[in-house]
Amino acid sequence: MGRNNVEKYSIGYAILKIFLGFWHNKVFYRKVIVIGKENINPKHHLIFAPNHQNALMDALAILFNCKGQPVFLARADIFKKKAVAAILYFMKILPVYRIRDGYKSLKENDLIFSKTIDVIKNKNGLVILPEGNHEGFRRLRQLKKGICRVAFQADEAENNQLKIKIIPVGLEYSNYRRFRQVLTIVYGKPIEVSEFHELYKQNPDKALVELKKRLSEELKKQMVNIESEEDYEAIDELRSIVNGKFSDSIKKPKLFRDKDLIDKLNQLKNINHSLYKRVCSLSLSIKANTADLKLDYRLLEKKKHSLLWLLVGCAVLVVGFPLFLFGNIFFAVFMGVPIWQARKIKDPQFVSSFRYGVSAVLALLLLLPTLILSLIFFPKWWEGLIFFISLPITGLAAWSYCLLYRRIRGGFRIRKLFFSKNRLFETLNVDYKELMSIIAKTGDEI
Image 1 (cartoon, helix red, strand yellow):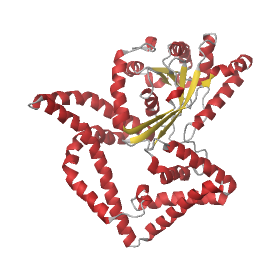
Image 2 (cartoon, helix red, strand yellow):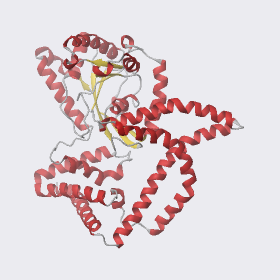
Image 3 (tube, helix red, strand yellow):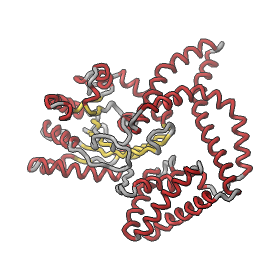
Image 4 (cartoon, helix red, strand yellow):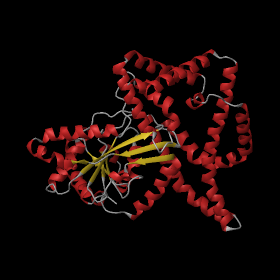
């Protein structure tokens, strides 16, 4: 699979996608919530436009939660080494050349553009990250005109017969870097490029601006968008304080709860600015004090931490400890090694991509030999198969064991802080109750 036939169906790619998709959706993330799949019609000529905050993981979110074999555009400098370029072409990624890559190299974009037309005509689905580069902030940045230019020129090249549609895609991660987080994907309603054809004929530059503006507006509807730079940290943290407990909710995903919360705050800012600033101040205070006391927001939500419940939890930890040790075989190899190696990554937004990549490669290299050895060493084949299947199951159980341990330890810590009348903890409790009271009343005041 090379650049010349990137739009063609690849059996090897399809097989690899099944395995890597399972690893992505079921192992690396504990839950992937997909909304709006009804907006994707595989018979249409589509361009997907996701927001870009988490490096390679943004592209993988589309790849593993969309049918077919979509093709991606990426910056050309990562294609410099032939071996790397061969892998990227196999992964159906095409280079886009910029002036910084050399003026002569810009001519290569003519060939790339020709291939994008083949991709769109073949109904693969073309994925373009319209912000251009990634940034670890939950806001939509200025979009580049490239995606609009590709859409117009591809349609024009085919006499406007393709009727290309751009699908805005909102991506949200409960945490950018950690394992076993929640990924939410929202496919918005398609934007008909044909709506801008007449304007494009009369004034191409204005048409590019208008389509880009429309795409920006639609993208903001599908994602968490914190526009305030001054209060960004406070608002971003408020999402976790208020809505953290809804991270796994499918009925009303946290992404939409966060959007509602941000909308209310924006209105509160105009109606009662002093109260808005108080909310921001409380958010930052709670964040700092929770960190100093080594607690988390889930512990603050519970009014009581029953001693009986904590003791039962301790008993579960004791009984489950052998299972935890066994599960650590899987956990240490496929999660521990990537975490340890990722310390070398300078760009924090590449940490998750690196961890996924290393864990997936380890799985590809080690799981099959482990299965074969299991079948050889156990006297009965089904015993070896059970042993092999138990490795990932107990590995993920070991992760849950760690969470339970932290919950029990935190519960005991809160009881100690409460009975010792720790001043910082008392301040934290007062601030938390005040903040939640304001948030509860805010909806009625607006």
